[in-house]
Amino acid sequence: MIFNRLYSVFEYLFCPVFIGINIDKIESIYINQDLWGRIFGYGTIVITGSGGTKEYFHNISNPLEFRNRVQEILTER
Image (cartoon, rainbow, N blue to C red; front, side, top):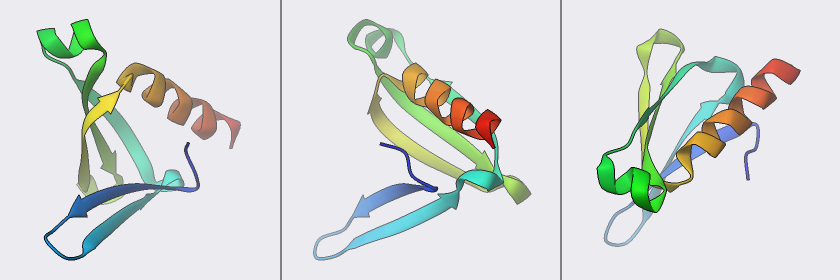
């Protein structure tokens, strides 16, 4: 599910930390999949925001579908 912000969750021992990127501030989406990721359908998504800020989303299921959905939302705006 994609909202107005994409969130990256980092779980520490006692408290999670949330980092968000405004959908409007996304400049590019890069997908990194190795052989096993292609076979089993997972990968890492790197989202570059305005100003060069990069957020990494590791072990995302169907990363191509995720990227396509984000691009659809961006073109609708």
